[in-house]
Length: 41
Image 1 (spheres, rainbow, N blue to C red):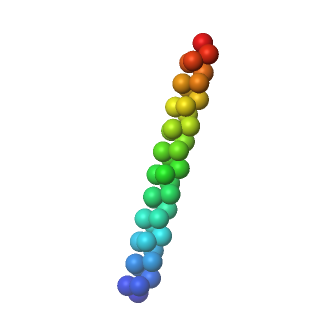
Image 2: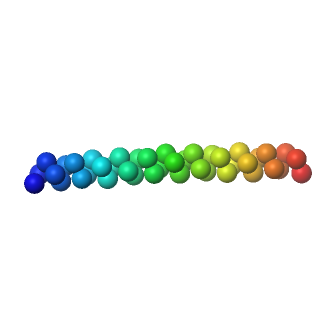
């Protein structure tokens, strides 16, 4: 039971990490697009 719980926690942490990384990528992409649009105004 402990081993299963450890695996679940590990998967949960991995999911949170990948979600945070994708969120950072999205915010960086949106920021870049905004700068790009602002440069052409």
